[in-house]
Image (cartoon, one colour):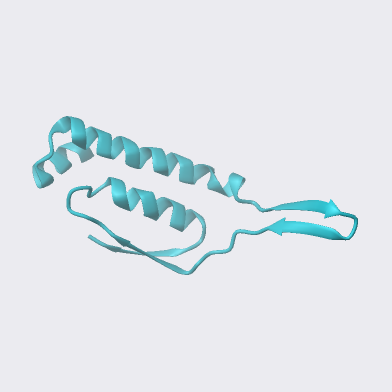
Length: 92
């Protein structure tokens, strides 16, 4: 259904619209795995030094969407930013 809407609204052919939706879905699937991947790590480098990796939210993330990729570009930003604890402002 999303691909059909992209074809009607943007004039893309169905192949391009399906690829647009597929790429967006791939990013959403990756974002769903981020809570496990971004838990943070600690590594003891030497007896007195420990390195720690932390993931902190940035705050507000802006996403400006071009007219020719109405689904794929927001899906590059929205799911990852939301899963990592940020707020997203989308300008279509």
